[in-house]
Image 1 (tube, rainbow, N blue to C red):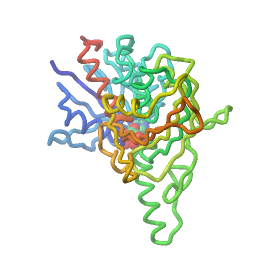
Image 2: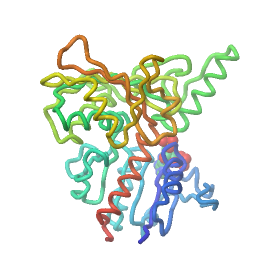
Image 3: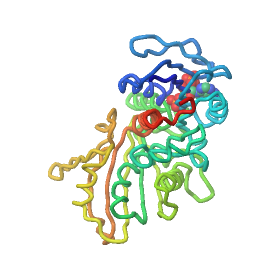
Image 4: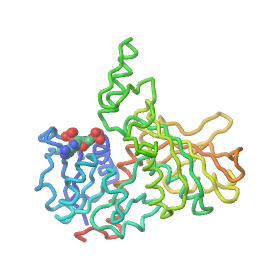
Length: 339
Ligand code: A2P
C-alpha cells in the first residue's frame, strides 16, 4: 500500500529535510505534493532524480492527500490544518500551533507512540529541544521516576529556519572581513556571539521556548508533576542543538546504570571517552538520526542528582525525522483517516 503525501513548507530548512528523508527511508509514496507560499510557486525541488514543481498552498491543495507534513510556521498551520483534515488528510504539524491542545497528540515515537491512536486529524511534532531531551530522559524515567529536570540549551541557528542559517554565514564572513555584522532574520548578530533564546518573552520571565520544554515534556511523559526549568540560549552553530541536563530522582541513580540503560535506548547513541575528554559535539550530531548522549556523571551537589550532556540534529530528529517517524507509525498502526 502507498500513500499520498503533501509537504507544506517544502522549501524551508525542515521541508527540504522531509523531502530527503521520504526518499532515503523509502516511504511508501503514491504521490508527493510540494506546497509553499506564492513566492515559491513554479520553482522546482529534486526528488528521486525528478524535478517536482512547487505549488502555492490553496483550498485545492489538500484534495486526495492522506498525510500532510506541515512545517511552514504556526500561522500557516492554523490556516490550513483544518482545511486538510476536512478533506480527509491527517496533518503532522511541526509548528507550536496545536501542541498543547488536549485533542492533539504530541508524539515522540520512541516515547509515547500509543498516543497516536487518539488523534482527531492533527498530530503535533514537539519542539526540537523537547524531542531531544525526552529521548535521553524517558528511558531513565522508566526505571526510576524523574522528579525534577534543570536544562540549559545551546541552540543552533537552524531552529529559526533556513534564512537564519544563511544569516549566520553572512555575518561570520562580514566579521572576518572586518565589517559590522547585519542582523535581519535573528534579532541580534549570532556569529561569534550568543544570546538568550529569541522566542517571545512571557510574564513568568521565561521565554516561550523555555516553557515549551516544561509543558511539552510533561504532556509527552503523561506526568504533570515533574518539576522542570530551562534556560534556552541561541549559539552560533548551524544545525544541531546541545543541552546540559540535570536530573533529580527520589533515590540515587548510578551513572553506570544510566549509561547501561542509555546504551540500549532507541534513538540514543552513547558518546563518551573520558580519557580524551571526548563527548557529544553538535558538529558530530549534524546529519545523524540519533541523539548523542554523554558526560553522564553523579551531581556532586545532590545525592540523587545525575548530570548529562546531549547533542542532536535539530532539523533531523528535532523536526523532520520525528515527523516522518510519526507518519510511519500511522501507516504501521493503520491510523490514517482514509484507512
Ligand atoms: P517560501 O519559501 O515560499 O517562503 P523556514 O522554517 O526554513 O523559514 O521555512 C519556512 C517554510 O514555510 C518555507 O517553505 C516557506 O515557503 C513556507 N511558508 C512561509 N509562509 C508561508 C505561507 N503563508 N504559506 C505557505 N507557506 C509558507
